[in-house]
Length: 334
Image (tube, rainbow, N blue to C red; front, side, top):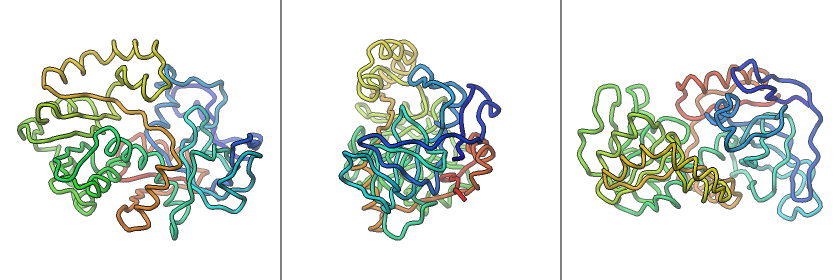
């Protein structure tokens, strides 16, 4: 079968589309005929080697984190799926394999696709949708009437976050370029800040919670606009000790390293009276089922920026890396 394989960390030349043996499902696995796969910033960061401290598999390694397709075989202990089922999934973090014509997925990480959704659109949901849901519902515990600030609302995670926050009853302010303003307003954003001309830090301390999708200077500015006692969850800045404890299986040595590298951010958060948490989302079939329910009820629209053929996955990943995508980028298998 064809797969997009990482052979050496670094630039695009370290990965290639090549032939590899088809995977065999383990006892709790479903074997999926992949019809489409979503692309995310984590894919090029992994290729670059930026995540080696967290996960360093033996190379060569089939890349890819989310997919949609049809079940073609199941392991002996699988009870929830059967051949012919249409599923979408965020594959296991230590496994990868979504950028391939076939992939194995733990049955607990998959869910039936939303009714009337095609494979290409469904493949855009798992990673970004789960990230937004777990950040807003579980980490920030957004309640009706709260004022939420989301940086980078027009990106893959941002387009889901705006809509989920509205379902949870929040008043949503987000940043976008003039090109992205119409999109984020159509998704339900109450207020839009043009980050190219407006200074976020001058907005005053009016927000109850923040979801950071950009990091850097934008995160520093967010500390200045949170009310005392507010919390910010980031998926774009630096991980802190709780990231290792809660999201990465309690790896205490890694927690110590994260304590050191995140000291500056945590100090700025303390001075502002704001809590800071970095989130690594976790695969969850039950959370995917919740997203599916929201999609079927018309509460959640999936924004796909571009669809590439699988043969052009290198170009697709370069487009994601450029940072210009509004919504998600997907590769479609032939």
